[in-house]
Amino acid sequence: MLVFILSAVLLVAFFLFIFNKLTLGISDSAVCLVGKTAIVTGGNAGIGYHIVRILASRGCRIIIADRDNSDKTREKLINETKNPNIISKHLDLASFESIRKFAEEFNNCEERLDILINNAGVGKSFTDKTVDGFNDVVQINHLGPFLLTHLLMDKLKKCAPSRIVNTSSSLAFTNNLTKENFLTHQNFEYWIIPFNMMTNYSNTKLEVLMTSNIMAGKLKGTGVTCNAVHPGIARTDLIQKSMPTNYFALWWTIGYNLITAKNPWEAAQNTVHVATAHELENVTGKYFWDCKVFPFLPKPAQNMEFSRWVYEESEKLVKLKESEKL
Image (cartoon, rainbow, N blue to C red; front, side):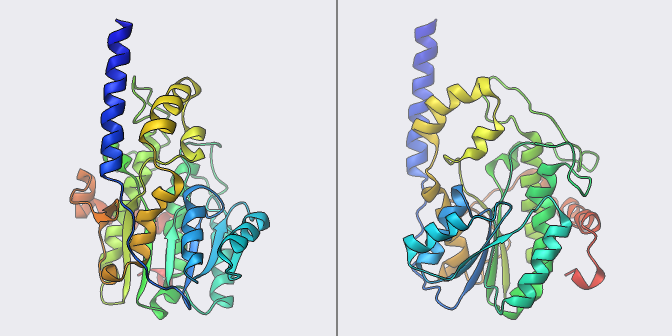
């Protein structure tokens, strides 16, 4: 029996390895970004760090917007890219006050915003509620970036053609989102194989996809594009921090670290491609996997009425003023 189980695990691992390699998208975009300005949330570590590194190496001015305002990371990136135009600013997506403060300072001090990359996210709750009264996964993954994007919209429109790139996930397909549980925190679902233990996370990544599509429609004709991306499973600390210990040891050793996961540089490719590729300048309202448009959407995201409801509820929850709406 043990031999059968091990053989099955190895067979699955082999096919996952082949699938991962065959679908690994590497951006062929070589666009120069001198004179452009980008904001990357969560740019101090993981995928965000490599997004910043790639953009900065092309001459882009980068504002790293992160809860951990790290001068050490900034100095390391400057040394690696020889680009001095990398700035680190404090942004706590779990606080609407912090988001508004960041946006106000940016709008007052910066002349341009050509690329907004909403990369930051968390996999599970670390506190009961944020200071604004929401589950922290919901606020950090969805409501916070939703508010930030609206507050920076005038600058994006001024610098059009400009781009918004929102980080979703393939786990959006494993959602159970309804109007009734839109803000409900849900605990992990412990499946035998832990591919979907984070229903709450899955729902927020669906909300990101739904509101991205609605926003893209609202921005048509402005020169501002809005797309969502799935970076893939990557070797970052997001999964480690999110996964129960009993699953993590097995997943880390066999599936995650050795076989299926991309390294952070590989996982950054899709976001960088959507943010920079010349041929995507007018492409909006799409969902990208591995540097290509993914042809399918989760069922709730196909429902435009439900998507508009999620968007309008989000406007209310972040307390957008009429002048801040699209």
